Image (cartoon, rainbow, N blue to C red; front, side):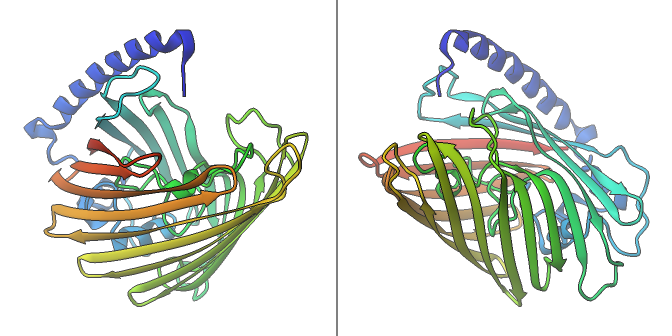
Length: 376
């Protein structure tokens, strides 16, 4: 993406933000702040590691806490300012085509979350910096549990702008600097991609942490910053079943976008599986798609893609992961990459990761990346 004549102002902006962020990091890591804990941990008198192994990865307890509307049944939270921040500095060996430095403040995120009464909750994720540039709001939603805490089959509602409920989170809980290729995949001029948050409503029946659950979503037929007009309502259905160490998922997404002087009616259908036991976790995802209009001649086209990734925690602080992924479609062709990564939790709320993105299009190439992330 090019910035044109304003690229120098963005470089100046990035340098200033970098100086501010590193000053903040220095404050975070003075001795008097080492014991500081984020909002929910402070609210319930817990440590960060109750919900996270390494920021921002969730433990089983953390996933259940999130699914239950940021609440622990039967526990009384303390009064706490419901704000958290995450700062991510990054290095990449690949030069940025818009002129950003190789080392920059990649992300500065502000989080606002909490409960509304006994059954409601809200969540806002605001990027002050995103990819080294001024950011925007990603998630901003309110939720409501229609059933009691002890309901055998919980029912919940959510409305607003939110990340789609995919088998693998495309952004907030991704440890790698490299995006998932399948969630960035776009076909022809259709701007739809699973990475982007959508605006709409979601109805969920079942518990995300155990047993079967289903969700149905109605979403605005629009893609942020695409320049393409909205069209109708997109629909999505998600099914999930947690059985011991196995989690199986399936999803279907249907929508339409006005492109090439006509209407591209498209669908994406995917299947995911996770196996997690002890220090080891393996995940796989396969997705297929059909677009009715991939060019100005009105031709239709198929798309596909998927990934396999494994993660192992060598110690409570040191972990490694390996991801192999590929995408294929009638307009973008076939692409694949491999992403080995190692990471280390420096303190309870900070981590360092180093990864190597190995791409094969048009020829094999290595892109080294590193991240230093702190959350408070």
